[in-house]
Image (cartoon, rainbow, N blue to C red; front, side, top):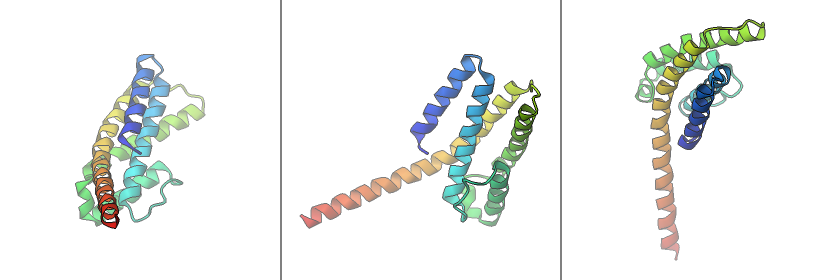
Length: 151
């Protein structure tokens, strides 16, 4: 997950929304939010295997870890995670309704809620992107210095 990937996904979401494809925009927004959440949890959690878990399980596990490890509050605050829980339940209900053949009329509301959740998760993920970028720059300078010393 990189900033470039997030930006590309957001442009696709806005284009789908502008074209009137609300279900596609909602689905893309949902997938981006889930990917951001899994990226955050994968970097901060002790249990690195979150790819196979469902969204609500990942949120519950991460809420427990944030409350037990206060240093994680720098990246994401428990208040923000509490906002993710109802959104995840609403999205599960929406997808269950679609599977059963019910046309759900709350797509626009869910898109707005998903954008709010995206803002919270993107803010937290951007802190991780920045720290990852700083680590890669330090690794590059260390390798350049070691190459110069060997010559």
